[in-house]
Length: 425
Image (cartoon, rainbow, N blue to C red; front, side, top):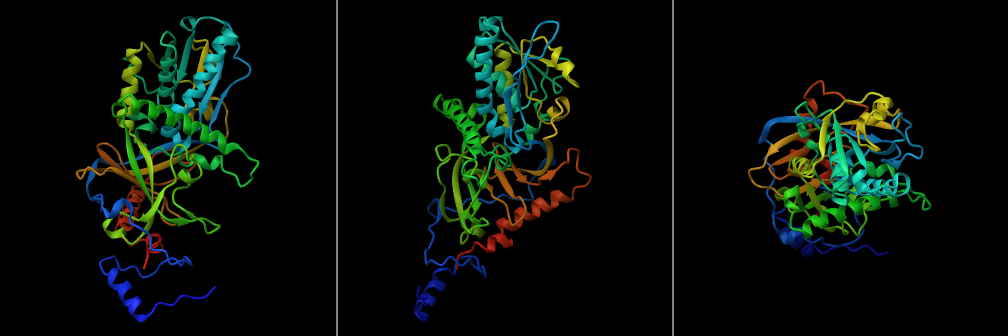
């Protein structure tokens, strides 16, 4: 292949054309002379003010990750009790993908319940009682989908974040601090394999597609916004995997079917200091937990779902629940409650910003070996983050929060190495 060397005049013209761009010193050698277009037609989006800290800005959540992927199954042998057999369904271990997978997994649970009612209990749904353990997004979504399926079904939610007056403290859940990006964050790795005969990714894709179907139902019915569901564009840096292939977000590129999230647009990023930097734009959703969780609780109360305070320590405590069908949505607690050693806590620290500019986009994809993301929710901005395996307690110091802000600031200022490597000269 011959080497194309530009003339001096061509070189000077190219430099003049880029005079208004940030002066990045290096660019990735692509082997092709292709000038990328500009995402959003050249529109420049506002950048977050990283000094605009929200009240109580430093927060953390503990992702209920599970090695091997989500445990979503009906236990073959019912729990034997003096009151008769009780059918157990597990739905836990969603890691950082709980908001994304909640409705899809709830749809699978509904199918299990439907079969138990028809094949094992053999009675009308109005004579069946269901206990849902857990009042995070997973448990609330299960209760919601069961009541949509059979409004006469007697459903009770038992959880430790329900007080004696039966008020649900949704702000005490990991779901509450979630950025709300629709993408199976982190958990997709448990399904990924280079083995072409391994079909585990199809399982995850099915769950993602089921969730997306529910979001589209809400959009079609004109109620999506009332549930905190908004269209969002998600920007990433254009990075490269170990084989040298261009990637953006692996959670989108590998963990999400193209029928749900279309292939990304590629081009120069629409930010003032990144407008000479290659990136990708995905079309996804925001699922804002600060809107969704209170709305689900309100809907369930209207549907006559009961909320009961309960902390379960043993399987005998589970057996004692007055229900014929029990759905375990205890998240991290399932590891202890059911002796599942594959459940792993992964702490995530993040910073909450005010959003006076009404930013309405996501930025994710990391920076070198560090996780870095910015998710604009309805009334604030979540900046992250950390991925700390086997850490379940509160952080001992605030050093990570300063690092999170510095990392995000450096990216949007065009100073980070991972940004410079994607610059186009």
